[in-house]
Length: 532
Image (cartoon, rainbow, N blue to C red):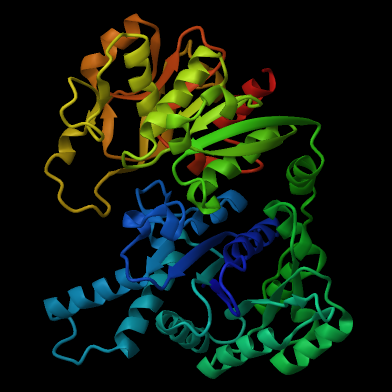
């Protein structure tokens, strides 16, 4: 039977529960255990697919086409676990399932209530993940902060699960904050005490505390926290600020977090080290030999989480090249009226990410034109690939009105158009082309050189496609159709003939990149930028 680690958070949001959960998964995998991680989000959306990136950050997509919380990206980057739509549940999804059952009459006339019906559905969803993946340990991250009204059903569900599973089968790790008050020069434990107090009021006693802190925790402070929070002194673990999130597993390892967990869950494993991770990932992130500057021109650059996987994948490409990647974030709207050459003056590579809506589109096209004409390495992802096709049609093929029907429904040259099956779609949620699809690469392409194989599989999230009516026209002028979905006759990858490195892909390669296994396109993109 799988064992469970429930990760909760207190005091404030954004303490890093997702990174903590991913790091714990990494530590347990290093001991030979099979792990999966589940994120429980308390909001009423069925999934984050319809949410603005400024509201929620990026939407992470799994192989099976689920639009999920961005924390699943952290889980996949740190571990080798299998993840699916069942690894992210929301309050909306839980309530929808319960109401659907009530309408069918599944509850046989009973009054449907939060307890037991909502909590039972949450417990069933958590257990379903362990059955699906057949793992040793399921790490369950509860979104939100202890004390939030919307989190209460999830906290009650894990309280019940801990009682039902019994000793050695479930435990709680609580992520909390130890603020440092500069004016008095003191580190305060009171917020942590109150947070744990709220958790205990619900009926959950934490086994381990992960304390986010700017300063090291003294033995005296650890003993005080342990006394007031009813945990062992060795269970007070420091979670210090680090330069790179990839240092977190090593930081926890040094403090014996994995040993505490396996002891509490009565799991017998070998105590393996993280030398391979530290030598390849951490060392190259902290002390790289080279340096390169990449510009990301998008419309959501004000929020770091909006392009989280892209930024991390660029770092992964840098790790492969033993280089620090300095990322310059450029609002594509500012490029529409500003000077493009000034914006990209000290840049060795340009990346255009995915997105929706008309805002900033012409600025992105100007950036693509600059990269193509100045022979600067370019990577266009999803919308970035579509706009690269539009730019080429306008400025190389002479189709001055070329556009996507997403932005101009009446364009005379719809180089990018809506998928045929999308014309009848009315609902916005989970109706795009989602998940993993195959692609066959052309052997003479830059993409094939990166992957070193013809047949690949990548994750998608879009409604619009390259219009096949323009393949011949654009190809004749030097746009290389480098990758195709053969079964559906869809263009997946485009390149520019004779360019140093210019690749546009309809899929999202950032969803399959790891620090110790950088994605081939990001690896070669960064490598090409280093030669500029």
